[in-house]
Amino acid sequence: MNNYPYIIASLPDLVLDFERHGLDYDFVRENIVFSLSKEDCKLVERLESGFREENITEDFYRECSACGNRFIREFFAFDWKQRTEKVAYLERRESGQDFEEKEVLHKAFAVKDLLKREQAVSAVIWDKIEELVIMEVFSLDVILAFLAKAQIVARWNAMDRATGMKLFDDFVKEIDETYNKNKIDFNI
Image 1 (spheres, rainbow, N blue to C red):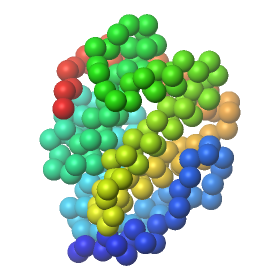
Image 2 (tube, rainbow, N blue to C red):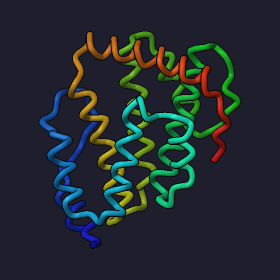
Image 3 (spheres, helix red, strand yellow):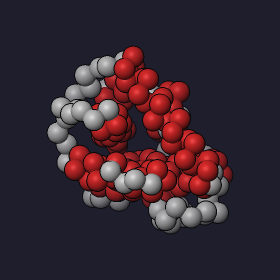
C-alpha cells in the first residue's frame, strides 16, 4: 500500500519557533500510520524509539546503521554524532569526529542560556532533517522526516522554561553517564 502522495499532501505545515502549537502528535501519527503498510509502520516505530532516551543504546544505533531505510540510517548516524559531540564538548575534550554540522553544533553548545542552547541544538537537528529529504517528494522518507520534526515540536510544546532547564540538565547527566559506560565506535 503506497499512499505516500495522499499522506504527504494531508500533512500540516510545521515551523520550529519554540512557541506552543496546536499539534497533537498522537493524532497526526495515527492518521499517518493508518495509511501505511506494516513494514512502513515498523520504520515509524523505529524512528519514534530513537526519541525516547531509554532506547538510545549502542544496539539501537547499530540496528539503525544496518537499516534498509536511508532516512533512518542517516538521521540516526547524525543523531549519534551530535550526541557524542555534545558529550565531548561538555567534557572539554575533542571527540575525534569530523562531520559537516560540527562547527554549527559547537556554536549552539557555546550558548550560555541553557534553554536557548537547547533551542539552537534543536534547530541544527531540524535543519539536518530537512537536508536529508531535500530532493525527496513523495516518499516514506518525507513522512519519516515530518514525524521527526513533529517529535521536536511536540517536545517543545510540552515544556515551559523551568521544565526545559530541568530536562536539559537531566539529559546532560544521562548522556555523560551513558557515554562513559558505553564508549563505542559508531562509524557509518
